[in-house]
Image 1 (tube, each protein chain N blue to C red):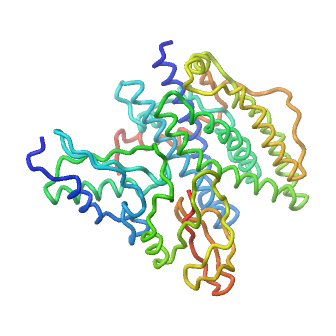
Image 2 (cartoon, rainbow over the protein chains, first blue to last red):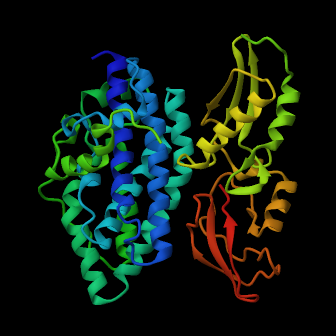
Image 3 (spheres, each protein chain N blue to C red):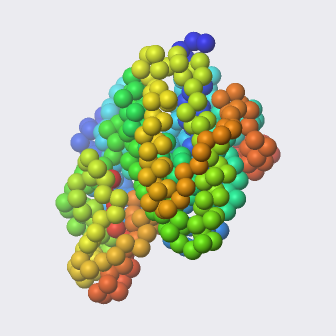
Length: 252
Length: 163
């Protein structure tokens, strides 16, 4: 794998994570528990779609084959997507959406802080920009986990179930393959394993503040680094890509 | 090919016309989005930085810039986005903050550098000036604003977040 190929593949992964998580959050538009929360979740979705746009645009320019952010978002099938399984899972209920936001934002807070020091100036710039937004995402997730955990028996049980059920998708956030190793060596991307203790601490602190139990890690899900996904991603893409597939190059 | 020469200062002055579509009392200079203008043999390049990465106003602002400069015979115009250094509310002028307040949006309270204050306390109400206000939601109708309410005059209002 050349440096260029590794970088392209890696940036796709970052862009895909932002794009797919954004899509899931956007599904809450007009469905959230109340108006302010509706605005909050769609605001988060907007931050992520902006990040996805910047990253996929950069991926296209690194690849150098004329693919734009739109081509990359709308003309790839699920086996060509590299987002973590966690972000493609259906929203299920509000507690699951919030538990996922906690897991992902606690990871991204550490990740983008480290990526700011990338030897690649474009990635460093996107990271610095995005980090400011992620701090809000984490604060929002933290507040909600505490509110649900300290709320009624029902809300506490639901958020605990969500944390327990989706815990098995969290180790994939830290998985590294040959792409990572190649880029870590050159100081372009952070070593994900090194971020795990800070992530675990942040998530544990929030769960404790919410009087929730921290799950014990058992069987952990994997696959996305190779483009192997849950059955849910195909359905998500069929909706997201419908217009561009039916009417290629359609514009507003 | 540039046939007629326009100075950078002339273009910057013209661009005062371009307002933020979400806060039409502020120009893109007031808000700190306009970073530079480059003049090369191939045309004019306007350098912008987005406030938030997903700010949907960017597309409108880009179209407004091109349309305005073309009516003045300035072409070809290219609008480029840069992400570094990341936009901050510190670039907003005092005059811009005053205009914002008169428009009914509480301007950012503190310097944003370093730690972001995720929820500002006691943001003064842009209508009555009372500091007896409460955060309703960190997220408002646009990415850059939070929702507050004033406990004295009872008006809800928007606060432009430090960033």
